[in-house]
Image (cartoon, rainbow, N blue to C red):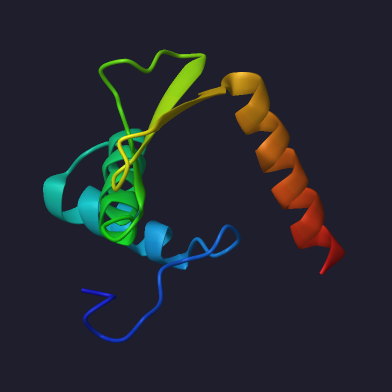
Length: 98
């Protein structure tokens, strides 16, 4: 609905859409905050990633290895949890520098 109204998908520091979705799910579906946060985050990620050139192979991924598949070539890359933590730290540091 947000996208239909011309809103952009939230960036790393923009949680307004997530907060509104969580509040809505808790009120309408009478679910816990944790469940509402999980389902809202999944829905936002699914919608925002429709045109992504990659997807995650959840059948092969584990808690410490994320298999990322290029949709066009079928090529797979594996990211470890250490690599992802490093990427997130670098992104947070870059955001603070702005």
